[in-house]
Length: 128
Image (tube, rainbow, N blue to C red):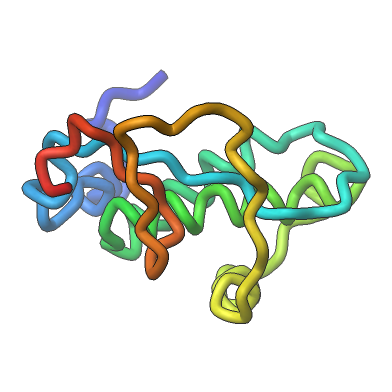
């Protein structure tokens, strides 16, 4: 594995959120989007790739997490590890269209739902 100093073209610097304060002390939960699951191979890797894309685009925590789980959700709609990958703008269009999220399936006592972001904010969240 390469160190951050060895990444090409200043990639490490681009991954660091510009607004570090927006990320510090956050406790957030992004529920999965509703899909018809065809296969789960690569779903975690796709979710992480979506999160990295959010970092590269300098999105805040809520938007980066939402994008990540949306990319993961797209990936499970096809059988192969990469067959469900679609362009970022299509993922964002689907989110904006009101894509339903799955229920959490556990008690969220102390957490509050942020409707606009589609994110649960935890009791220990410093911004919540």
